Image 1 (tube, one colour):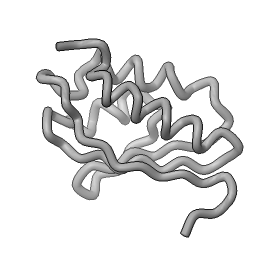
Image 2 (tube, helix red, strand yellow):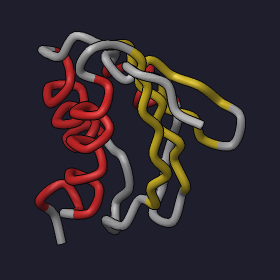
Image 3 (cartoon, helix red, strand yellow):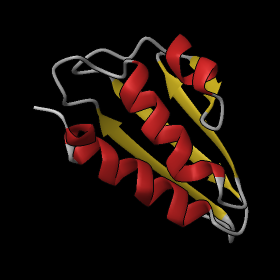
Image 4 (cartoon, helix red, strand yellow):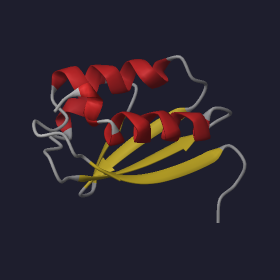
Length: 93
């Protein structure tokens, strides 16, 4: 059950090189301006999606499943933005 101001999505990293520095930067930039907190989880490891170092610590290679949870006024927009970047392979491939 979802509550107002909360959104969650599950995504599979599709680009060949995974979530390396450039895609991580795009991800962080896409949500840093939004009014919400965003956490990304991979295999139990959780990172703040607004932190480039946090996102990189996930070491999400191609095929990794990420769970994105956002809380705040722009939560749905944040999850959608991350989902779009992942589905578009961060402009790679």
